[in-house]
Length: 225
Image (cartoon, rainbow, N blue to C red; front, side, top):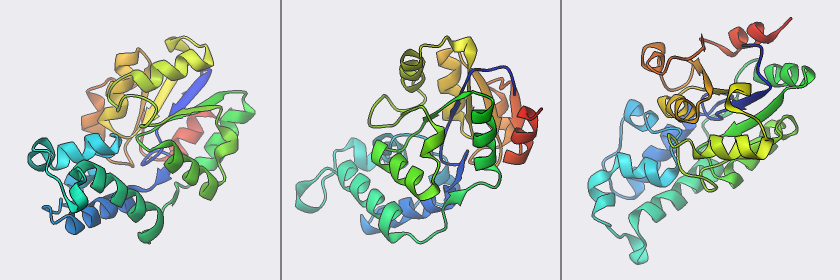
């Protein structure tokens, strides 16, 4: 995985082991809103999208009808607000960096690489995770779901390339979802797929990733001298 100047990471399921917490937060939101509670795999399948887009896919009949809820608030808005409270304050499911993830970031920085994040999280959500993990220092830039079009649009990557003043061939996108891979493909950026997050190798392979890794340790070994 050597040879690139800029390494752009997805966050959830790529650097942080947060999938179980995201899924249980989504399920709690559905229960509180008296909606059908999605099973684990269904809830997991929308990780990487912005929250409004995720809820629109999970509950298309309710969202498309513009169903209101308490105090006349749109259902999508209510679910988004409740999800953030669940994930940040109420949910006690562990949410930690994957083993070797910080060493990977440290090693790339020591090689004078530029690191960035492209995530379905909001800016506030990402900054909270940076604070709790102590990893903000490694990243030069980030694009979040409230600053750009949701994945799989290439908008996040196009904005990052412009900000960092680099060409697509200097950049690689590392992610665990088909949304990450499609976003990178549409931006003309090489792709690295990781299979320890939300998707398996077979589904990710359709986007022709340059590398596929089954663990952060494998990825780390690929960039070490």
